[in-house]
Image (cartoon, rainbow, N blue to C red; front, top):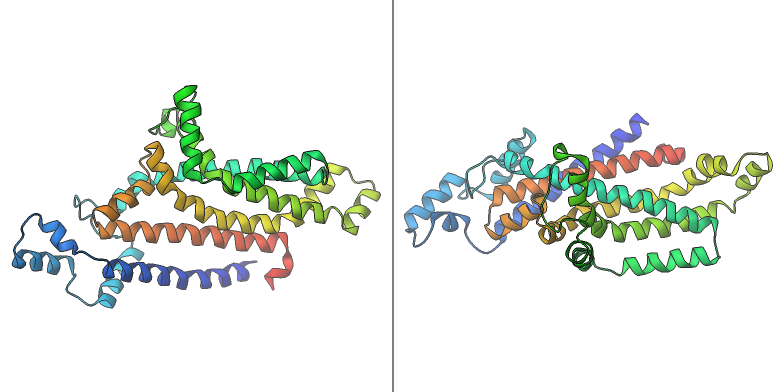
Amino acid sequence: MTLYALRRLAVALPILVAVTFCVFALVDLAPGDPAAAIAGENPTPERINEIRVMLGLDEPLLTRYVSWFTAAVQADLGSSLANGQSVTEVIGDRLPVTISLVFVAMLITLVVGLAAGMLAALRHGRPTDRVITALASGAIALPPFWVALVLVLLFSVNLGWFPSIGYEPLSAGLWPWLSHLLLPAIALSLLPMAEVTMQFRQALATVLKLDYITNAEARGLSRPRVLGKHAAKNAAVPVTTVFAYRFAQVLGGTVAIESVFDLPGIGRLAVNSVLSRDIPVLLGLVALTTLIVLVINLLVDISYGYFNPKVRT
């Protein structure tokens, strides 16, 4: 298992370099001059050139990237062009909000998706299965941004059950923290939850028809044990694939959802950094999100070795 994990890690590192370099190059090719934006109104060419030299923008692209990546490996992402604050501190202040949101969203995805998928598989071909399948198919077609607006209108404006904007840290209490995250998490989780339901339903229904499941039940094993120890484990491989793919989508979806619910996370920070051309913050966010997605994919790849030992070889 250790050797398998090291092989997957060796594949992940070049991806991190490639993604960050591509974004670095695209930002460099984007219209507009960060030095001119920092210089203020009606700057002189000398002042713009001075700022360019100070920021290192006069150096070749590859030289700037190597310098940035070398510093980033040491957790030095530079300083924000907007306020001069350390990029690491700027992101660190916003990161707990987004981590909390993504955690709650993916928890809802797994709990509800696996439960609904198992129920549909156990009632395969029956009305319960058809209802769950229809609901999951409909949920896939709903845009998270639209779902967020409907949830705010229904549960915040009309019923007043949940706050419509803002965020409370976990230190303020479990319910204040959860009440601010529940609606945005539901909006984010609807699509991946529907896909987990569909994938688990199909995989589990197929596994339950295999001979070894019939033999296990014939040997007197209880239905819950057969489901938990044998069937669900073998049906989990496609679910983990969907989970990894949709995790990246949920993380990217925080940009829109955090704007709707006024959550001070890295999604809103990314929008602000693009509008203000705060390149160090933008590059720091790209590096961080890429690293998070790669770590999740690595953990999912390792989990394949647990669910199916054949992939370790």
